[in-house]
Length: 175
Image 1 (cartoon, one colour):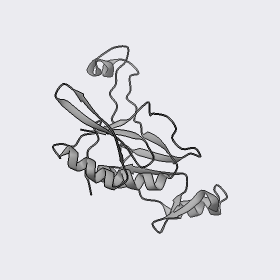
Image 2: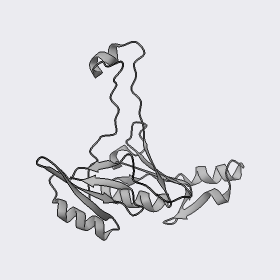
Image 3: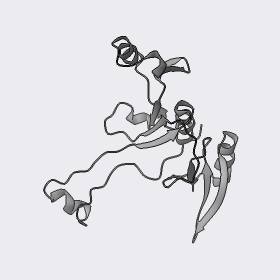
Image 4: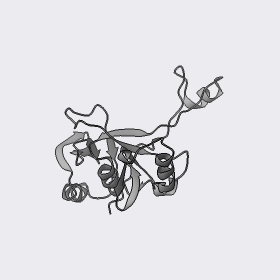
């Protein structure tokens, strides 16, 4: 399993009216927001599995009893569920987070949601995965063996990276 930390910690920083974060905190009504990154996917469960392994994160556990109760009460249908790796899940989405943050409201999170169409154009947003000293070529080879595609190599001064695509074509960089 590859354990690759994400560049951004996905925690927000408060900036209001051009004020630095410390000053913004004292500004009346200033607050920071939490967020998750949502990725459109043809197969959200396969994407969640792939990215959890890539990042060393965890696929968030399914609450099978809750899903069954929602179906039993008429809030959902059997068609909105699926079985993935022997577990009852919502068919339309799956999330991942760092293993030490499972269940925390403050967790960093990627949510993969089902959409009917495949990816057709370049992403306007992508994430960078820092390798923290791991060999970039070796990581690239491992990712390609798991279904990633190498797109191009980039450089800015002494910093270099590979732009890759995950199995559904979403761009990301490793450096």
